[in-house]
Length: 314
Image (tube, rainbow, N blue to C red; front, top):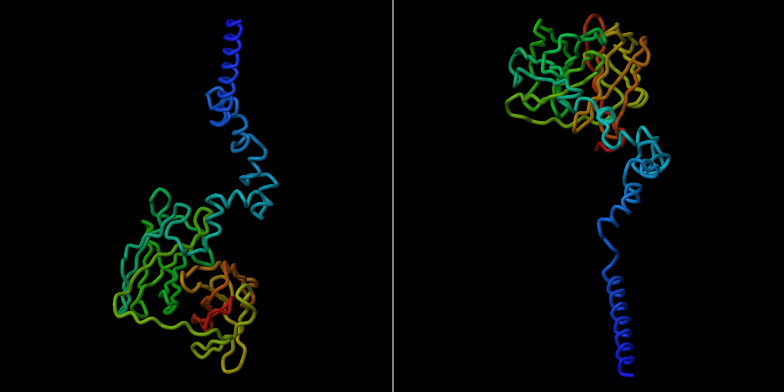
């Protein structure tokens, strides 16, 4: 009888011990042994890895989920995650000194405001060698735009190239200040506009940007702007009579547009070779300065306009 009691008590104790162990296991959480982790690994791969279709769509490579999440077709969504070509295309021209491996390297470090002095520079290729192979664009191998950072004292000139690839031209800055120098050129399939800052020492006195106007008077000519910044058109009169500008740089005129602030350089193309009509790729709303070069009686003139696409210029 006492033996039976002892056996019953022993069994009851085992039940209690096993119950407590099971409860402790639940309180401490699931088994995280290596065997259990290996068994769970496929589920983790499906959630974050490449093979699973759901993961591919979530990260925007090709699935329809990426299109819905990012608002663009698959290729655009891929570019938004760091594709260099897409990022370069999205960056307005003129903001970079280096693009596609090509670099604008000035050899002259300052501009003179007293007399024309040689300004020299090179375009270096991805192997750091001076570029000597250019594609003629608008009748020139390279266009050099020089303008102070307040958008005053604009110049559009065409330097000459030495056999070693060095470009040179006499330049005189209109007044002291910080200038942006743009080199606009095409080489081996790369259509580039590179920019670099060059100072003109002296007492800098910034000029306020003129308010937007539809007419500009220059050298006895009146130039009228029609249309908007995306599709600007111009007409020219002298003494009240309409004049037709002479061909200049492969068209009736040449237009440069720069954004106030960062001096982003817009891509502008002639819309009609027989008229002063253009198409501009405008990256954002804002205030822009337009510089229209036209030729008449063998002389080039520049008419300037302020355009405000967002009605922000006060």
